[in-house]
Amino acid sequence: MTDAPLPNDLPDTHQTLAPLANAGRLDTLADALIERGWWADPNGLEPAMLKALQAELQELMEADRLERAGIGRELDFQLAGSVRRDSIVWLNRQRPVQALFLDVMEALRLRLNRSLFLGLFEFEGHFAHYPEGGFYKRHYDSFRGAANRLVSVVVYLNDGWQPGDGGELAIYRDDQPEPETLIEPRGGTLVVFLSEEVPHEVLPTQRPRSSIAGWFRLNASIGNQIDPPR
Ligand code: OGA
Ligand code: MN
Image (cartoon, rainbow, N blue to C red; front, side, top):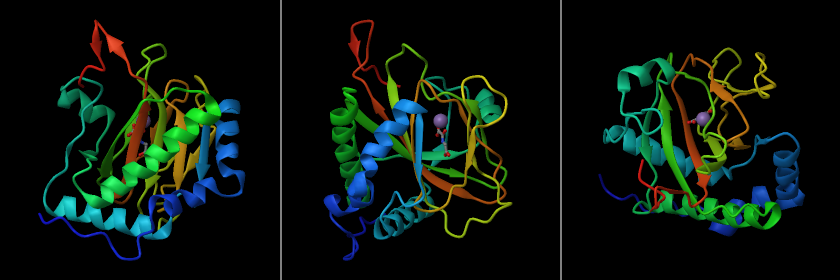
């Protein structure tokens, strides 16, 4: 697989973050995280950035780089298959488009730390592709006190999503059975939520569904090991 050069019309990190930084949106984000634990913006991703990320995932899929996702630190894929049905590839800085996205997340990390005093340490994330019929049952991204993943980010890469296509992100409040909101995975939508506080679920999708999911972590130390590998 060749390293595709960055498209000419791709904005720099500052511009790419602009939709987020504009008009006090970051303050809105911070307030929403404090008040209800989640925030969603249908225009969270700059259009050229969205296009570049879509092309990048397309290329990775054609090169067969995605692998079935597991759950937690387990490698029990049989169990995982009843919980989630998606394939992933972790983001890395070797590829220019991914590096730019990681720069944007780094800028977001610094802004979140400044406005929320969170001490977020690092971002990790992956492309995810759900085939038709794919889902991810209700879960938390991190367990309270594990001090691992603190803030979750999801960005959607799907063009022309229609009502009835399913695949919504259902966000729940505590242990209530009905979702507080359903978010359609439309291209450019950005969702940010507190990993330890917000149960959520990917409803079965009627068509292939692409996203980036990522997490800002604290520098967790378990058994004297700083940030042990997954
Ligand atoms: C996850 C997740 C949500 C989505 O990967 O942990 O909850 O909408 N993803 O893709
Ligand atoms: Mn999740």
